[in-house]
Amino acid sequence: MSTKLTLFDPVAQERAASETPPAHLRSDGRRRHVAATPRDPPHAPLASSTYQHDPQQVAIYPGLIAVRQRQRTRGLPVPGTGKRGRIHKFSGPSRKRLIRTMSQVDVDSLSTPLWTTLTHHHARSVATSWRQFRAFRERLRRRYPAARYVWRRAMQRRRVVHYHLVIWFPASQQGLVANPLTARTIASLWHLVSDPDSRANGEWGARVEQVESIKRIRLYVAGYLSDVRRGDDVPGGRQWGYSRALKRGPLVAHTLPSIDSEALVAALRRVLLARTTRPDWVRGYTRACSVVVVYMDWREAAELLYGELRISPSEPQPPPGGIDL
Image (cartoon, rainbow, N blue to C red):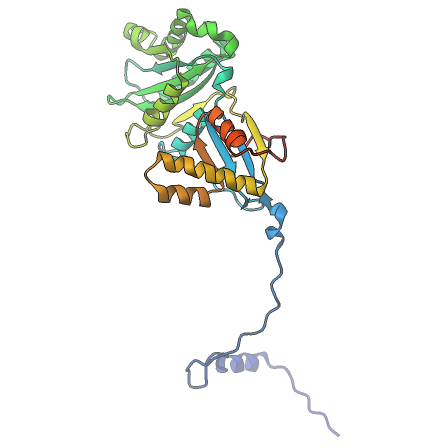
């Protein structure tokens, strides 16, 4: 009995595979139905587990309340946390961050603010103006180590950069705000770095005034300084910022049960509906966003959380740094 050996020919194998029509085509080129190959039932991935979700949290800041709803965020890229590109203008997200920063400042632990405006007498390049403003901030830090501030720069109609600052001192140093020497000192610091040879700059280059109402400052920042349609952006570079010593932590922060989180979001939805004429936007915002933010005084927020809804937090320990806004 003889056995016939068949040698493997790769060239003939490729030719046969190319001449064989695909499974979903008939010999005449027309399509035919092919039954799907049965697959194993899908298994629940680890990402769908409970620990892959951030817990429901609430944080009360001096000027806003933030609620984190149950969202699958752990292990997923978080929008806005990556490396930012080069700054070209004062954008909408930048405006939102500026308003929220002002609402996070604990003004009850600080003095009444000083509203400061710095201008140049003679025109100069944006880079030169920025170096002089940085030198002014360094001098201000050395002269008043406890000073804290938020700044915003813009372009005047005569195409000269000018700066706005909201300066605070600790509440124990309230006397510095009421002292006229403080305003003259701040003006002289700017005069020495901006136009030391200009008498007009020494007299009109800096305007420092005391503001009694923090609500007025917030409204001014929200309405004027954060208006992205004014077209006064400084080309290139940061458009606003704040000092490192400025504390923005929450006054109260808790972890909530799911039912309390839903009740709080529903209450905040009613607050927003009473303020706006865009109900569809409010409903979409409170349902789709992982963090719902509503601007209100911390006293109103505490009354809503503990008084009206009578929510008792499950964990009294606040999350580190509050909620990422």
